[in-house]
Picture 1 (cartoon, rainbow, N blue to C red):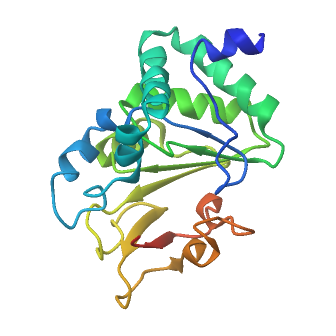
Picture 2: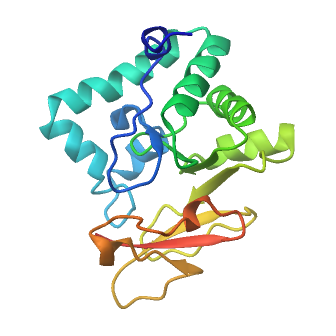
Length: 212
């Protein structure tokens, strides 16, 4: 597959300077649970950074929407190959994040992502999501995720506890409030991961992000 052919199915980016490796984003306006939470004061989505960026940067908005459109209209087996090809080609450090904007759209999308993870066993994948039902449906059918994929189910409200029954979760805490599990220190480094890789580590049950 040529690069041009692969990008016809969507774009894997290596331009996020705050995180290591590559990432994949889709239209944040298309979030299912997130769109509802965005209207709820005190929720983790109420002041979504991805929505703000899409509103003020038309080129970013177009790119995120294009990725989702290409996914929806694609042959999913070819989409899996195209994403795997781009990740292997571009990723030099071994870490990939799914959805630095947007979220899972369906069980099928999660199954497709899992196939990408299986094709790229030397890459550690992190997928944060608020689509609890999609994750639960996947686990009912398939039992578990590949060893190189960490799916972190996010609590919907700020200063909430981790959601039970999931191996890997994430929460958001305000300054001075209790945090659960591992406390993200990215805010002390200009919102950059730096040397930390906790989000990709299955042994880290919950990552608590400071509200910013």
